[in-house]
Image (cartoon, rainbow, N blue to C red; front, side):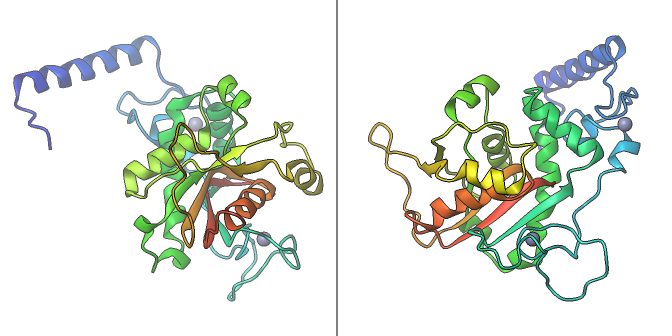
Length: 267
Ligand SMILES: [Zn+2]
Ligand SMILES: [Zn+2]
């Protein structure tokens, strides 16, 4: 705990309080979903910095029952583990996917601001929504610090255009809060069109061969991944086609043992 009685610290606290308050007076912060002004006391970090209390209440956590592979929530009652119709009879390269919240309403909008509005300051809020996914019972007995957080890569042209890779930003935030190490292992070889409006089948065909392991760079080799467990991190999981292709590369030549997909939202 920093010493609040230290004069420099006191001055800093005073400045933070008055400058933040003054800015709120001039430009009140608005809820990113319904645009009502946020209270001046609203935190400046995390989900409460972006959504009013009512809109926070509209966030829907992904709760059991959900598909044991892709994490698709199921609205009925279900007492046993089950696979959804999408996953039944299909070979899926990742072990399973977990997500914090459903990609609906306010969360869909936050992700849009983060990615397409290039609003990097939203990463802490999305990390807050992602972290509950780590409480999945299947991870309870795992030594998570032995796992690696690996981002879904962007094609380098898209990354330059956007200014950051949202998956890598989430990895770094999760790592800060959990101590799980990160590694950028994958690269995107092919620049695919935005996949948002495409059917699952078309997405899969588009993505085939789109990912590969990174090449050693300036003499630095890749970490040894044989037998490793990996969290493949992204902002949102929709059809799972991207995650499947990434997991194929990780489990193929890299010899990774387990790949669990970790996202803030489930589409
Ligand atoms: Zn609101
Ligand atoms: Zn499924």
